[in-house]
Length: 238
Image (cartoon, rainbow, N blue to C red; front, side, top):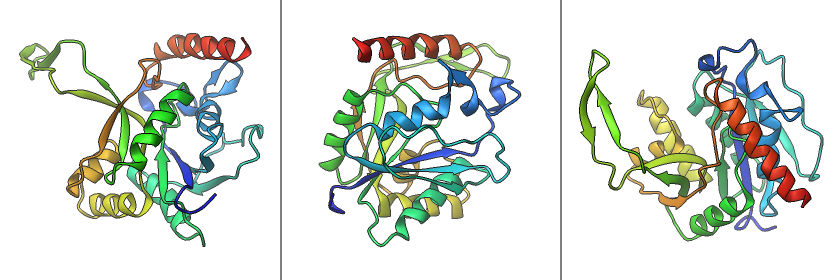
């Protein structure tokens, strides 16, 4: 695979997920007998265009174990940081130091185990023709309310043109690395990698994902993820 075509997955996994109220980081909770992060890694590596993955772990991570190899592709671990952006940067720095760094990277949440091959196909196709990169997202369909300081409705926010960002998000390695470094050095608290690109004046393309591409955030999400993964596994066996 040439440098122009190479894609690497980047998975920041140094967080602890306090909202889950779990004794272990949420990426290591078990779904259908496997850690959530193992499902997320496999969802990236099983795509034929993805050449490998880099995972950023906490310096004191005692729960990590590499998943059973299913693709033969390289899986590298690096030390992450206190913020998500620092963990992504750690992965990008490792890739940039390679003799043949990939042109594109897919940044994916370690707790988003249900992304489909079809979503990745659409994202990669769009990203290759979009110089500012692209991200999976969902158009907002529900009515949005803005809360006031007392926990009451302050106003209704028009949903026209609003999208909910998902992952993976796909960007040129060099551009994303510069954008994240700018965000970190500038003290910006970004919540996804597209935001770092936006701060640099880029306009990433939106690619519609699936509602089943769920993120594990709160305890109630586990049952939904179990159901979605069960359906996906049944579909593959069928």
